[in-house]
Length: 318
Image (cartoon, rainbow, N blue to C red; front, side, top):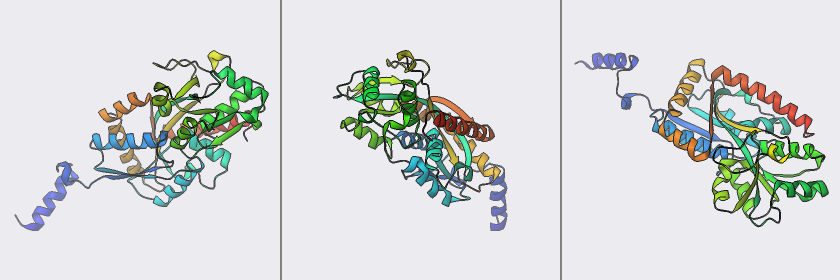
């Protein structure tokens, strides 16, 4: 066969999708994780990357952690990948809260919404060595001296930060007086709690589950409307504190990609979340599937942004 005839045949087969997988252009995903290692975004990003490879939706996945300012530092860096059809960034409700409270110069509207992946409720924990035993003990001290209760969690505007302000408001304490310590990632917050450097810590349940099971942290409340499946921890509502707030995580694409490139990334994610690796990640981390893609996800983010802002205003955070 003549060389030009062979090349034309290969091109025709590629167009028809008839070439073997190895002959297709490699899909090398670059995953921006706008948080330090060890937290919920880090776990989500790496779980998604593993699922993409497990589903043969990506040949390779590289990760970059860039923590700080509720993800705004990573977001700013991600904006430099304009037009890159293989770039993804993990994000979630925490990023929306950080943008609201921090008045950041960068916004998510500059990027491309792809999919919401999971939802999760928060848990509040005490260090194992804490003299407090229950949320009632924490609330009593909060009423006595708000500044003496040091709350530790994610960046300003995170769901645990909002929850702490809501708790204060519900028990008659000025939310502006809470002593909240923001950490750059779940790993830092975990270390502070284990070291007894904060009074009470908050995060997604999955981030603290192993320490709770090992007796290194004492779980005192979850922010769900009802008890979490398989978790023997009372809700705030069960303890007379009318607070409920959830967390969710998703993924965005780079700015400036085309509609076809956006669809291709959403299709890759669709394959990944059907994989065994993703199912195992959901079970291991006690994540609830909450898949929403494309324009439906865009609309959800807009609504949640407005809802979080209203909650923060009501709680005296902004």
